[in-house]
Image (cartoon, rainbow, N blue to C red; front, side):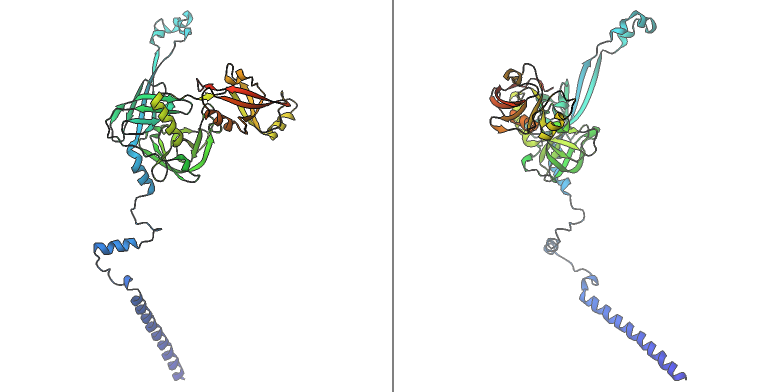
Length: 404
C-alpha cells in the first residue's frame, strides 16, 4: 500500500522539476533573443548617435524638445511692444455747487477744491512693422492720447508719435525713434488662414506683460455688425485664444510665428471669444496711414438691414406693422442720413436695395463691402424696390467724415 503513494509523490516531484527546468530554458532563450535588454549599451561615437536619433519615430518627439508655440513666440516676441497712454480731461464744475444753499453747508471754498482736470491712463499692445520704428496698434489704444510711451520687451522705452489713426478700421500707426536695429514682426497672409488653424495671441492683457495664449481660428469673415460694433467696416478673424483688455493692438500669430491679425475686440458677455483684424487689411491701411495720416472711406448714408422673404412676410402678417415690405432678398433701408449721398439721390426709408451696378445685393455686409471698395466720388447705379415698383437711382459716393 505504501508503494503507490511513493510513486505518486515521485511523479509530482518530477513534474515540478520539469516545469522549473522549462521555465529556465524559456528565460535564457528570451534573453538571447533580446540582448539589448540584458546587456549594457555599447559605447557610441558622435556619428552613431546621429544615426540613432535619425531612426526615432517622428510621432514621438524627444523629451525636452521645444514646442511650436515656443518657436513661434521666439520668432516674433521681441517685436511685440507695450503701449502706455496718458490723457488729461477737463471736468466742468456743476453749477449747483455755486448755489447759496449748497455753499451754506459746505463753505464758499468747496467748489474751488473740486478737481477740474483728471488724468486718464490707458494700456495696450502693438508690434514693430519695420526697423525704422513704425508700430502698428489699434486706434482706440492711442486715440486722443496726450502722451504715448512705447516699451520694448528688453525694457527700453521711447516716446511715440501718432502718425495716423483710422477709426473706421480701428487701426493706428505710431513712430518711435530708436535707431535702425529694432526687431521686426514677420507678417503672414490672412488670406491663407483656415478655420481650425492654430492661433497664438501675444500682448499685455490687464498689464501682465509678454503674455501668450493659445487657441484656434474659430471662424473667418465675422462682420463687425455681427460682433456688435456697427460703426466699423471690418470682417474679423474669430478665435478662442484668450484676449483681454490690454491685448488690443497685439499680434495674432499662426503656428509658424507669422502675424495673421491684430487683436482688437472682445465680447464682455461671452467667454473664449475674441476678434482680430486680418493682417492683409491692416497692411493696406497702415500704408495709407504712413503716407497720408488718414484713410478716406466712401459712404452712402443709410442704416440698413439684411432682408429675406421670410422676414418680410413675418412683418407683413403682423397687424401692428406700420409698413408693408416687399417679400424679396435685398437690403432694407431703415434710415437715410440727412444731407448724405443717399438722401441727395432720392433713396427713402422703406426702400429695398436689390442691385448695385447690376450686381445682386443680398446682405447688408455685402453692400457695405461694395461701397468700401468703390472710389470717392464714384457714381453707383442702385436699383431699389419701393412698394410694388422698382427704380434705378444714381448715387455719388462721398467721404465719411465721422465713424460714429
